[in-house]
Every structure is written in structure tokens, then in C-alpha cells.
Length: 112
Image (cartoon, rainbow, N blue to C red; front, side, top):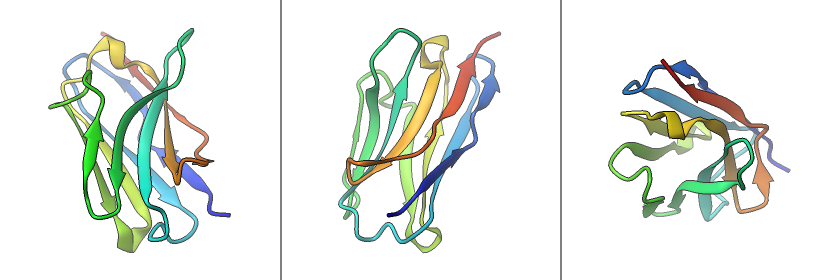
């Protein structure tokens, strides 16, 4: 089974940017959907952004216009570019493929 490893999280000031990466141990071509989710303390995990094979994307209302999901199939990697970050974006971010394969998570903290 393919394994996922996230990277790129960290501490950033409000208004700043981060790019998260999700590297797969094998080909991601076979998966119909890839996505990013997040879970803040005391809250349920929520969908942030998804991309479907063929390129169709979908975003949570809270991140539309600020976050962009993209893929690099040749590198078996997909990304989440996060701009104009807000304190409420603070959470552990998880990548997912095929609805059932999850990464270990990477912490994003937005604070001054």
C-alpha cells in the first residue's frame, strides 16, 4: 500500500504563506482523488481541498481564494499552497489519497 509523507508545516505570521508537500511512496496515478484535510484542537477533521484525476478542484469556503492544491504526477507528490494565512488556519494538516490512505500530519501554526 502506498504511504504518504507530509512536509512544509511550521510557524508563520498572519498574512504569510506556506507550501505543504505530500510525497507518495508509489504512483498516485491510480487514485481518483487526492486531498488535504486539517484538524484543529478540539475540532473534527475537516476537508480543506481536493483534486480529482483530470484536474477538477474543490475547496472549503474558508480557504477559497487563498489556498491552491496541485499535483506533480512525475514526482508522485501533491501540494497545498497556502497564502494570506490566518490564525484560524492553525491545525494539523493531513494529506489523503483514495479516501483511505493518510499521511502522518504536519503542524501549521499561524501566530504573531
